[in-house]
Image (cartoon, rainbow, N blue to C red; front, side):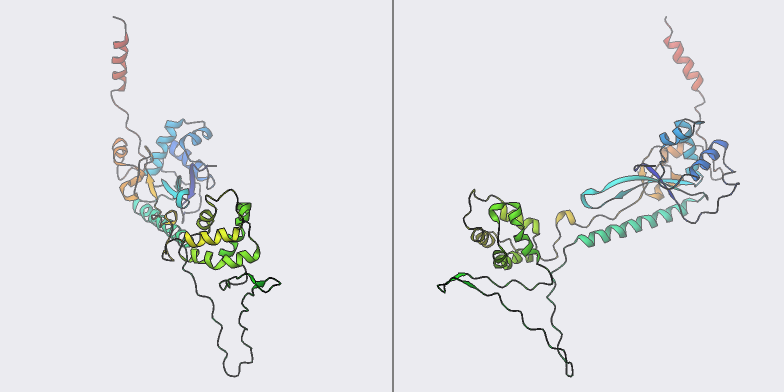
Length: 332
C-alpha cells in the first residue's frame, strides 16, 4: 500500500468488470492495466513498486505502459494538498478508470475534486476562527398566566472579614458564566501548575477573573495570557494575587476586534488538484496536460487522435551512433 505514494483512487461510474476489458490495447498495456484494475484503493502505483510486482517487465517498460494507459484515458496522476495550516503537505495519487475517458471527462472530474477539497479547507478554516463573544442569555419574560417563577438574581460574592471587622479581601463579582468555570478562571487556576510561585486559591481566582476576562475580550488567547503572566517573574513572590493583579493591570494588551484571527489561522488558499505528467511528473492544471502528458512528452510519443495505444518513438540512428562511439574508443 502507498505511504502516501502514488496511491490508487478509483474513478466513479465505471462499467462492470468483464473479460473483454482492455482488448483494444497491446499485450503489455493490457497486462499492466488488468493488474492495476484488480489493485485495491490506496495501493502503491509508483513505477518502481509496479515493476517489483510484475516480473515480466522492468521499470522502463512499466513507465511506457503507464504513458499509453494515460493517453488511452484510463488513468491520471495528480498531486493534492492535505492537512491545514502549517501541517499542509503534498501527496500523490493516481486516479484509475476501467472505462476509458476522454480529456473533457477527466477535466470535469478533477475540477469537481478541486471544488470538494476547497470546500473542505474552507470549512476547516471556519472552524478554527475565533468566534465573536456572545451575549449572556437573557431570562425569558414571564407572561400572564405563566405559573413559572423567574430565576432569582445571582447572589454577589460576600466579603471575608477578620474578627476585628476589617476587610481582608474584596473580590469583584465574576462575570456571568454557564455551568462550568470560564476560560479566564481556568487560566488563572492553572498558573500554579506552570509555576508554583503563582499558585492561587479559589478566592484569588475569583477576585482576578474579571481582569483576566478583559484580556480575553480584547482578542488574546489563553496561551498568550499565561505567557504574559509567567514571563520574567522574580525569584521570590510574597503575594501571588497582588503580583498577578499588578501584571493584569499594567500589561493589559491593546483592544483587538473580537473576530481577529491569528496569522497561523488565516484563511488558507483554496485547495487545488494538479495533474502530473505521467512521463516526467511536471505538474499543471488538467486542461494544460491533455492525455495526462505535458507538451514536451507529447512530442516524444507517437500519439494520434485515432490511436489509443501510443508507443515511444525509437531513435532511427541509434545503432549507427553506437558504432561511431566504438570506433572513437578504439586505440589508434
